[in-house]
Image (cartoon, rainbow, N blue to C red; front, side, top):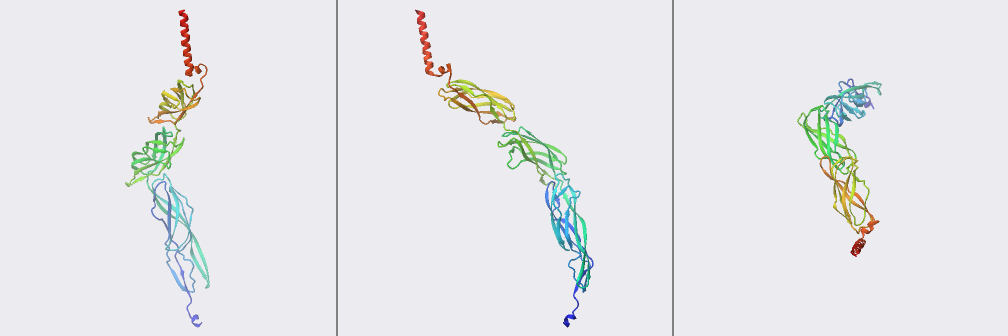
Amino acid sequence: MCAFLVLPAMAGTVYLTGSPNLSAYIAGTNEFSQGNEVQLTIIVENNGLKELELFQSGTVTRDDLPTTAKSVMAALDAGDSPVVIKSDPRMLGDIKSGSNASAVYTTKINSHAPGGSYILPLAINYSYLSHADQYGVDTIQYTYTPVSQSIGIPIKIKSDVSIDVLSALPEHLNVGSEGYIDLSIKNTGSGDGRKAIVKILPTVNSTIIPTDNSVYIGDFPSGSMVKARYKVAISTNAERQIYPVDVVVVYENSEGDVVTSRTSTIGIPVGAKVDFAVVSSPAEMNPGDKKVISVEYKNIGETKVFSARGRINPVEPFTSNDDIAYLGDIDPGESAVASYEVIVDRSATIKEYGLDAEIRYMDALDTTYVSDVLKVQINVNSPTGINILLSNPGYILIIVVGIIGIAFLIRNYRKK
């Protein structure tokens, strides 16, 4: 006990000066392209220094250091830059001197942002131990001072080519056919493109298939406008509606690198399929007839057809020596009449028949197509009246013999 009483009193450390010193910067590159959404990682670093400390007996060491930033909250703002900050403020906790903490912010660069350098304000709020007053040997009163500061985070937006499709005009685009798309495209970006190529790209499961998808336009300076024309085919599985097509520009930038612009998606209206219907009444025939029937075809689609020809496919008990008829050009909603010579076998069953028919035509690009199969109705009826006699060979033979007999009797009567 005596030895214990003569030991020196326990000593503690008191920091007389010092405070946090926070700085911030972007981890990785700070250069971004127009229209991109990026995950911006910002590092907040504490470089506070302990300039003067006192080591004395009877002093209790403080729990916190004056250089520690307590409960750090960091909020990123767009400021005057053409970006959108999608993330809320981040809580970083305590940051001791010589250490750092990171926060990730979702940031969207505007599609038409001018190229150049910008500053994103990072608002930081924290507190630090500014005073610690000791009372007696076991009581300390801490005083924390709140601090608000703003740190500028520099970013750079590349001067890229950005496109805006001013118009997309379809020409002769119908389901199952070929046609053209005429585009007017403007460079709304702040960069100039050299050796530029405008491409149209089909989307996933697209029904619009480009026949030629690239048009060379050469120099494409900022603010300029160009026109491009593309030949495309429309799938037979398409419907009458608007389908998407992607447009991009591949060009050489000011640094000589070949880059691709942000994709612009446009809608292309596709018209209904070219279609026909038989609108004439069923033809009426008797067994053994040889007759010219008239079939009226109507263009029930939305597109004019050119040099159309109708054709029927006669099957037993029908035959034909003239099964093709020229119809000419047919506008939507208009009709054309075809005449076919049809022969019905004498053994034909009395009933309604349907003969397959089709129309071969050309579109505005002189491409030949064949319509879906149509049905031409022919009713084979039992003969009536004089037709009963004319349709039966036995009756005809009796009539012929009777006529010959009558003629013979008349001749003998005149001789007498």
